[in-house]
Image 1 (cartoon, rainbow, N blue to C red):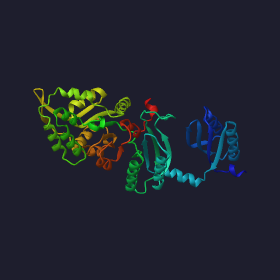
Image 2 (image 1 turned 90 degrees about the vertical axis):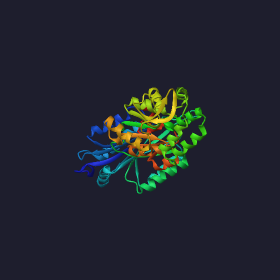
Image 3 (image 1 turned 180 degrees about the vertical axis):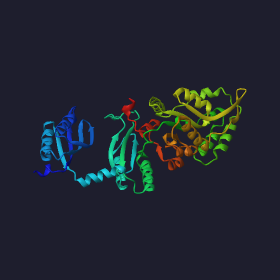
Image 4 (image 1 turned 30 degrees about the vertical axis):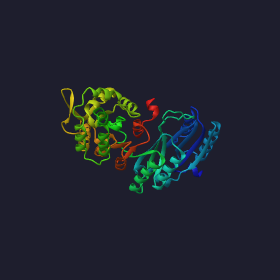
Length: 410
């Protein structure tokens, strides 16, 4: 009896490469089916019409493995494909099966344009950490051949297996690469929560909007520079938020409420804000503004962007003028975190299914409470403390961290 037709099945990895066209996979699998083979693993990718197809096949002991290998190579040639077979030892397969219990992570690379320098730096860092790259996927659309003035988006997602050798060193490397190579890197554990986010909470000023609304109000009151300096210090975490807010609002006393709609109309949304919120709504996410700013402007954005919840500070207005006080408890760092928990409870989800996005020190507790906390174009103290950051692209880059592809939106 031929050794290949002994009592044990034969494991072969078939790798096909060549020009892609419809029907190739069907034709190859038809031949395997004729010989009663089992497909233990499969991976297929097409890059610019070039096919990369891998099939890990178990050939039953009742079949002649050598003949099947030869048939597939000859059939591949007929199809215009190169077939490269590789025998897999039983013990190697067993090790591979045992590895499916290992931790899995997702690393998302975000940039205006992915360069070879960036790609090499990231892949080398992963190798240094002993992590195996299972799959690399491009989530962004195909870039134009000739550059234009239009802002571009580029995203590559790495699916990884294993535990990093040094988690602290890994985070430091991620921050270092981000600052040196003009990219963002988001590291997430690939678990059930990562694939089932349901609620997105956003800070308003300098996150959803390009401005700090209180600074715009202060300009109208003639105290713009003074208030702007306090705002910057508060967002860097250098001042007590409650005290700084009261001081800034106090400087607005006597300002006519008629300026509020004028300011609202001139506010500019952050790049990608509308695309992000439109897409989230389409996919069934619930959205909220959790802001240390003011309800008037939060409600304005709620109507404009169809946001589900708004929590912010209420300006006291008497006889058509701002009194220089806020009504009720201040939405500070601790309250933002508590409101995130409240949102999760109201929407019936685990807080790990929540995403929080903000830029200031008063956002840090909220970012830490969320399953995915993102520092967006944030102050240095926030970038260092937050688990994830987006600093090179617009708000719609958050969609890539959810695994959304450009083609899912188009």
